[in-house]
Image 1 (tube, protein in one colour):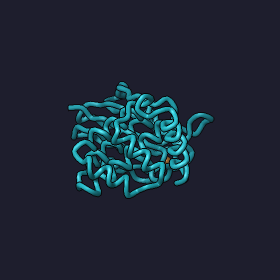
Image 2 (cartoon, helix red, strand yellow):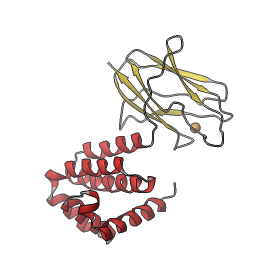
Image 3 (cartoon, helix red, strand yellow):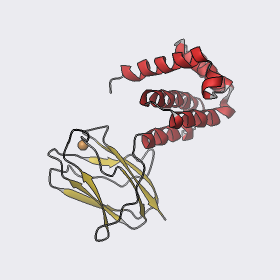
Length: 217
Ligand SMILES: [Cu+2]
């Protein structure tokens, strides 16, 4: 994604909010409404001031923007809400040192890009995730891209694609541990999950190629 695109999407959706009345349309609080107005005016100092004078309320504000993002109908609207939540959370982190709201935004926006999580049946005790060959509607994907497994289970990624993929955990937002070598076509790699938690992972070559393993106790 180019760096300009989110700005265009944000500006478009925010303009729609302001024109239609933010409070009525998306139940945004006064803090969020003011923050959005400052954003729209490209007034970074005011954005910082709003966060700093409302520090105690910002984590809840960020959570409610995330909820709006999750409810959004269109992809652009979703991305714009996540983008706004991320900016508020970043300013909050810079001002307080508290990373929790920002990590929450990152986790939830990651989740929003995944399909509903599945509880597949293991094959000979191993859960299989395919990296399928590119087709008209699928290219550079993990399939399934989000699964729930029990602690102690092994997952095997099988590269059925005609190109190589290399992927690893994103330990800042979830658990570390997944660290595949460069998987050439036909190769596979497996990992045993001994610790419960959420494992978000990404292909280093194709950044839209993401997946998640949720490991239950
Ligand atoms: Cu890839």
